[in-house]
Length: 239
Image (cartoon, rainbow, N blue to C red; front, side, top):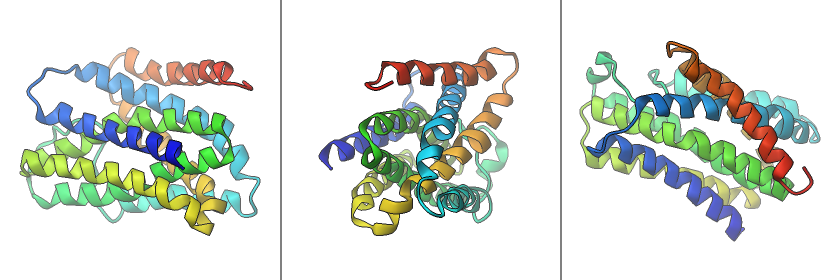
């Protein structure tokens, strides 16, 4: 349990790092951030298809749980809450209402909770899968923190509230990791639900962001992410 919580904490700290990149005056490379988004998308997609999905199918009703996980993120991020994207918010419409920042937080809390469920469930299935899922989750955490903090600031919230928001989603990830072993339905279906969440984040959130960038370098990051998955998988014990 302690190693799993440590991994979930490290993943949550990546949320905080992303938020700090937005509220501090230090210069940052927007191009590199977009590359990180596409690279993370490729890695997550490969982990979901090649590692998480086969294990999810071992449980009765696993595929249904995968679909539920996918639809859950769509419900919380793009149906019940206003649309937001993974990356720094620059749209003028974000300044219309202070409440948009709060809705962004509401939409990301379930997603972040299932990041923790994914890490914990994967480690329950095996250390190799746990390491791969941790890497996949950690890769998209920085863009998540950037997205939430920038929406908070663009909608008129203070830097302090932006920091509290990214700390909240980091805590949600830790909570997901903590409660998973103690909740029967998450022990049985947590990995399958998280597989659906991972599919959504990779294919419906991150890859469309990569496609928005001009040129080939950022979109090509998806393929590099997939190649990185294969490299990591070979290097892991039993690979």
